[in-house]
Figure 1 (cartoon, one colour):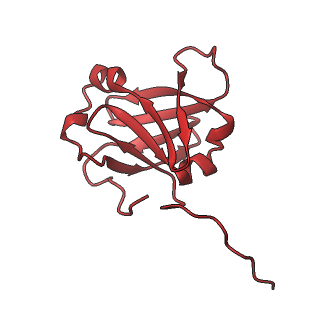
Figure 2 (cartoon, rainbow, N blue to C red):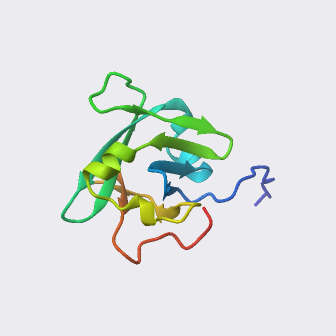
Length: 127
């Protein structure tokens, strides 16, 4: 077995989304790399009000209904989601200034990346 040199930098490789106090959603560098967000550029948001979960469908189709453009930077990607969060009564104003972080998991059945907003599902790492 040969050693592989590690040259990547960043705060975390696990895909994490943050909900910021100003109504934005931020994806860490782990999410950008895991979901190839640099080559997507858009996201379609879904919400399950019974389960209190947000679903994400990443796409490069700017004409897809509901597609929101996100900005990719060195440290991650972000979108303005205040209208979405307000519409579904997600209390983002209670989030910390740095954002409350949640892990992203792919749901095969739904075909979406999912964030569970129920208490106790916040990410434990600094993602």
